[in-house]
Every structure is written in structure tokens, then in C-alpha cells.
Length: 277
Length: 315
Image (tube, rainbow over all chains, first blue to last red; front, side, top):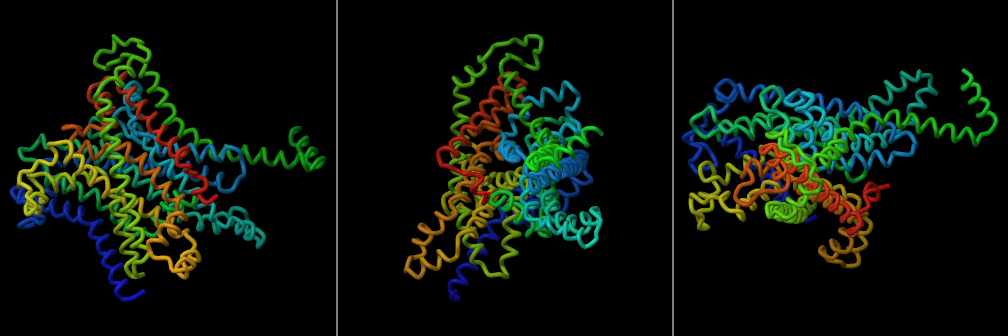
């Protein structure tokens, strides 16, 4: 590659980075604007203030935001863990056993993944109210499985297919007990795949909005995206732009941290599941 | 006890029997392991959609439960002859076509840059590109809305040189509101497409590229005759996934306009009927129709464009 070409591709790369980070930089900047500064028409605040963070963490909006944050973490972690557990067994069967119905399970996972979420919400809204699951954690965890389970099955079976399972037998030939062979050989090989799958599934659950606004009514179970969407600043006299921006920054921090640490694995998981399988 | 003995004799008697016996027990173990996941998937999707279909046959409003009555397919007739449905349908199709087309071109450009980028830059690029993918859609929608809103944004003042008035209300008319919604959707989902295309690019044999180069093919010719035909499967899979995803657009519309000013999409229509108006019967019918639309799009892709998912998955 000539130097000129290198510079050209380098500039291209720089443009991509700007493209990806610009809206994030904007919402961070907005979150540090004081209420009089919001409408200054500039990208940056005239002077940075932390008042918006104070509002959502200790002030008026804390009773809306903090329970939502707790709900989001709890519900998403449980939905992710359940999906990974179920998917681990399914993916093991798909990767290692030869049985009719393998294709059916994978196609079902695909069909569920492309299912319009809103079509599930309508009947659940009615049913949940009748059986008392409306506005509860289980009432969200169950439908969240429709988001987390298909991608987990799909991604994990892709990972499991690449594990050299013969090594388990090799270890047994070398004198390991079946349990030792599984724990010392297979678990370390499978763990990164399971972990990556969990991150991707968590992103999907964390992103949910439709279930969150439709199947909850109070801070008992309302997750953050729904709380943000319904955050109209009724309890305040000014427009809630600043506090919303601050809350948006806070819920973005966990995903950015995950991306920075595990970027290579996440890319492998996403493309493995969808393209190679 | 007796069964085990019988089985053992059977195995020793005929090896053919043994094989089918082994495959039968493998099938049993397979379904034992995969069954729970399969059952849960059906429970959270197949069951609700059947329930929705059942409820769509009734005239049923939660505010007036006593007057629930069976009306057959009347709800479908009401919806399909109402311009509200067709307007929402048009907006949804418009957003889908615009975003998917732009994302495909932009995503391809991003993938090409990532292939060529210097080794040192690659991890940074990869992390950057994952950020829009991982950010919550609602957060992205707010970021774009605040940027364009006259009372909190910078877009109007930045582009005042192009004749934008400082109080331009982007969300006041359908065209400009849909434009901003599309921008937000494109920003958020292009990285995903570009990652799929990047994986597709990696599957194009290097030898073919070299051969074409030796034969004197220009960059554009190589792109058209070698690269794109060889990654057709990856392109089609990306296209199918994104089309279906775009067709479900909801979060951005809810946050930016709440369906006002001619920006209502199908998902929002279903939501409004059920959750806001408590019209369970009508809302269920909209949900079923949305589901049918998604199935039709999927069938169109698989039959019309011959998308072979198993081929794309390298089997």
C-alpha cells in the first residue's frame, strides 16, 4: 500500500470513529449543561455543571430513576442467566448430538428472533393483568426470554461447534475421570463462548423498551428505557432535557465498559452466530 | 431390569438394531437437553400470537368488559378499510426502505475501511463501531431528538448558513420528522450491518482478487465481479435481518414524535390501540396483521431473492 492510500484509509477510519462517537459526545455534553444553558444552541455547555446528575441521583427524579436502574439490572441479569442456562443445554445437543429436530430448533430460534415484539405485548398485557404478573419482575423476565433466548441458542451453538470435543476423550485416555475431563478441558474451552453469548443477550434485554412501557405501571418493575421514555418532568417546573441526558449517560456507561473490555469477543459472537453458525 | 436385558440381547444380536437404538437414545437425549429451550421459545411467542388471534375475533374493550362479543373477522375489516392502518403501513415501509438502503451502502463502506485500516487502528475502530450497536435505542433517539429540537439542539444554529431558521421545528411535519427518525435508526444499526458484511468480506477468496488484479481489472470491476458476487449470501442475510428489524421500528418514533404529525408506524398503532385505548380486540388484530406482514416479508426474501440461510451459515 502506498503512503497516500494509507493516509486515505486512515482518514476513513477517523471518520468512522467520529460518526460512532458524535451522538454520544453530544448527550454527554448536554448532560453537563445547566437548565439555562440547554437552549444556547451550542454543542458544548458554557460552563459545565453536575446539577442534572444531582437531580436524578439524589434530587427530585431520584425516586423515578434509581428504582428503574435497579429493576433494569435485576431483570436483565436474570433473563440473561436463564437464557444462557437453557441455551447451553440446547446448544450442546445441537453441536454434539445427531438428532432429528435440530433444524426445527434453530429455525424456531430464528423465527422468534424476528418476531415483532409488539405482537406479543398485546395478548400478554391482557393475560398478565388476569394472572397477576402485570407490573412484576417475572412479568418482564418471561417475555425478555423471547429476546435473549434465540440469540443465545444461535450464538452458543456456533461457538460449541468449534470446540474440539475429542480432547475430552483424549483426557480420559490419559487417565482423567469423566468429570475431570469435563471440568479441566471442556469448561475452559466453552466458557468464553458462554460469556460472550451472555454479553450479547444482556445488550438485547437492556435495550428493551416495548415490554418495559407496556407491561409495567409503577417503579416496582419499570426498567430504565421505559422510565426515560415516560419521564416527562411532571414533578418539575422545567423541561426535563438535562436530567434525561444525565440518565441516558448513566445507562450507557455499563454497555460502553462491556464493549471496551470485550470488543473482540463481541464481534466474534455477533458474526459467528449470524454468518457462519 | 427386564428391559435392559432385552436391550442388551438385542444389541448383541444385530448391529443394525444397535445403530437405530443408539440414534434413538441420542434423539431422546437431544430433545431432553434442547426441549426446555424449545418449549420456552414457543411459550413466549407462539402462545401469545395464538391468543392475539383469538382475541382479535372479539369486539372487546377493557373499559367495557361486559359487552365483549364475538364478531368474527370484523376487526380485520375495520382496520384494512381504515386509512389509519394504510398511513402507518406507508410510513413503516418508507422508513424500512430508506434506512435499509442507506445502511447497506454505508455499512459496506465501513466494512471496506475496516479491512484496509492499519493494524494499530483496528481495535479502536472495532470498539467505536460497537458503541452505536450497544447503546440503548431510546438513548440514541433522545440524543438525536435533542440535537434537532429548537429549544435544546445545535443543528439549527450550526446549519443557519444553509438558511435554517433558528426555530425550525423538525418534528412538526412528516417529511422532516421521518428524516430525523431515519437518521437515528441509521446511526444505531449501520455498525451491525457493517460487521456482518465484514465477516462476508473475509470469506471472499484472496486468490480470486489477486487473479483479477493480474488480469488488469480495475478496483470497481473487482468489486462488482469478484467481491460482491462472492459475498452475496452475507449481504442477503444482513438485508433480511435488518429489513425485519426496521419494520418493527417503535422506540425512536415513540421518543421523538409519539406518532404525531403523520409519523405513526405499525408497531405504534398496535401499541396505541391496546395499551393507550385498551381496545384489546382491535389491538390484537393489528398485532396479528403486523405479524403476518413480517412473515410475508420473510417469505418474499427466501422465495423471491432465494436467500438460503443454511448456505449463509456455511453448511
